[in-house]
Length: 196
Image (cartoon, rainbow, N blue to C red):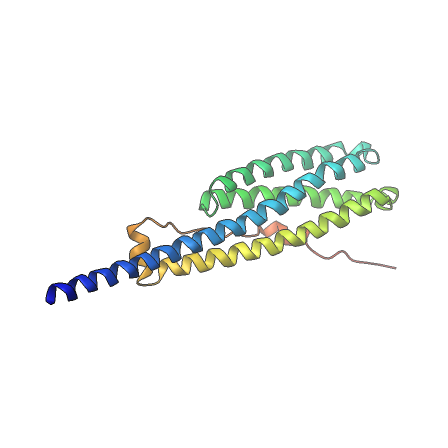
């Protein structure tokens, strides 16, 4: 009888550990899925940038450096995204993604400030449509980043609380990193001032 009770307790303990393990796996998969949404929106953003540069190129003949900076920042940001896509949640990959996205945001901000100095470009239907699409995509990136950060926080909380932390340690569930907004990004997102 004592052997059956001991066997029953071992089975319950094993089921408990399996439940915790499965919960950790589901939480990890949730933040990876949330990162996939960031990937989709950033790819959309990357696809818009060449059209924006081509539209501006005709008007900004004297601003070649600005256009080249946007193109170079886009290439670096794509490489940062590829590294993060290979290891979503990895602190180094997320830091590199944040750094390259911040550099791209800065280059795009300089381009949009330059566009302000060219009224005919600013009034161009194509430029207005592209900047509207870029703004919409930026908003979607922000929402996707928030969903990702929420999923990472839920995963990290799950892996750090007792008794899940014991199972997480046994099976090497590493902490996931948030995707933080670089400081200079806040300046780019400042609302434009309208004057009459």
